[in-house]
Image (cartoon, rainbow, N blue to C red):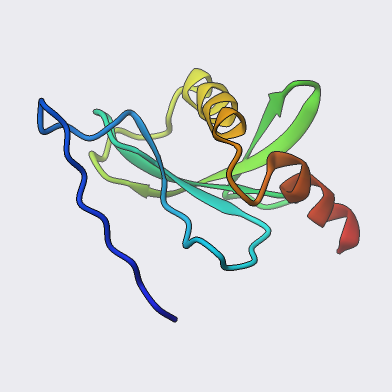
Amino acid sequence: MDITTSVLKSPSNKLPRWMVATVPNVKSTSAFILKGTYPAYLFEIMPPRDDENCIKVEYKKKTYCVAVKLDIDEAGEPPHSYLVEMLGWYASQKVKPYLSKILSSSEED
């Protein structure tokens, strides 16, 4: 697998609040999102499943599974509002896999 790196440039030298951390052009049924501001987390948006690591989140009348892959600042479980905000942000970015594709992949299992 090829890895592409990017240099983030911002006037304040701070990370953006949300960043897609998924490898482009790789088919996936989940998406990794980095919350770059304190408290920082790495989340994975996955199809709904029965899993103790899955936090079920309602967004636009659909249920998604979000897993905390890394609690960077060791702040504990994130507030539910972060997860809803993240799903809204991800949907607005129009990157693949789309939320609809992530959701539909659970129906294919």
